[in-house]
Amino acid sequence: MSSGGLASHEMKRYARQLPILGVEGQRKLKNTKVLVAGVGGLGSVEAIYLAAVGVGKLVLVDNDIVELSNLNRQILHWTDDIGKAKPISAAEKLRKLNPNVEIEVVTEGITRENVEELLKKVDIVIDGLDNWETRFLIDEAAYRLGKPYVYAGIHGFQGQVTIIVPGETPCLRCVLPPKLRTPQQIPVIGSVVGIVGSIAVTELVKYVTGVGEVAKGKMLVIDAYSMEMFKFELTPRKNCTC
Image (cartoon, rainbow, N blue to C red; front, side, top):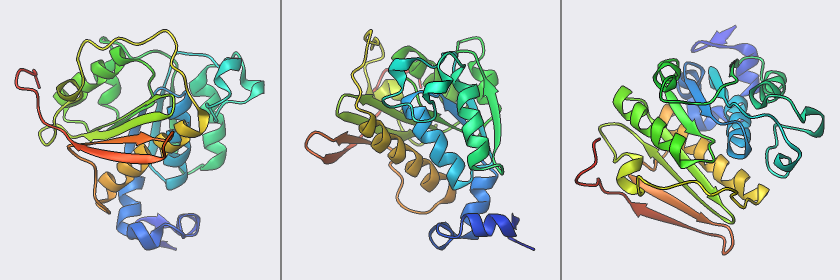
């Protein structure tokens, strides 16, 4: 038996969220392909909840291997995974969590040469990155291809989230200095990664299903030190190429 394109076992798996998202919302998630750009701290949290909520396909992209210093926050990777490619380590757990979700593994970095090819595989991108250079690369390509991009970033107790929709919102370069450079090491509290990654997934789910108010054109700033959240309106930069 099925309902709205969902098998009976899917109806049971998602029973606690169906009253919120509806069968149609769940079907939309099932038909959505998401690029998880980076499967470290943010990417681990995002990938777990995207798999749990029932997106149809995850494309996991990362060229790093698991290291001991990752394990305070990168919850898809465990001690036995040290030395393993992060997308492979992540995929092993995600397939066990939800076998209904198709997982594609890409063990290479996102570059100017492959970014468009990767983006053409998916409907939407979510940010699990730790460097500005790759973020701006994705931002430019996603805007050009008309792909929504859920930006998320972390520094210490603080985090930021917004969803960039080409033609509807400013791009990332509009709202952040385009010459930002990544520091050698970013201080991170694991639980804050969990908060920010969960918010990013929530924004993606709302956007895909049409349920709730999406932070399009707004930057959510999370300050876990004082446990406050702020929301800022974003405006396009006059000389931005987007």
